[in-house]
Structure formats: structure tokens, C-alpha cells
Image 1 (cartoon, rainbow, N blue to C red):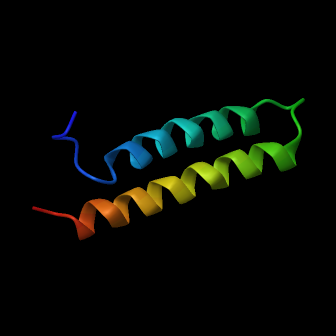
Image 2 (image 1 turned 90 degrees about the vertical axis):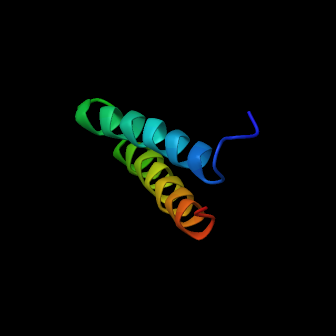
Length: 58
């Protein structure tokens, strides 16, 4: 577990949350504000995780 690069977990988590937000957006009956919030939260995690990956490159 110590070999996992810093930023990889938030990036993977962000990808999963973004996909969940995208799935909520495609459902017509769901609340659009919640879907957009989940989608944006996931995108933010992807960006922040990618920044960590670039900063802590070996």
C-alpha cells in the first residue's frame, strides 16, 4: 500500500464520483442540482488528484 503514488486515490475516487454524477444527469427524473453537484465534486477530485500526481512525480 505504500507504493501508491500520492494523488492516485483522489483521482480514482473522482472518476467514480464523476461517473455517478453523469449517470444521475442522464436519468430524467433525478434532481438536476444534485446531479450537477456530484458531477462537479468528482471533477474537482480528478483535478486535485492530477495536480498531486504531477507535483510528486518521482
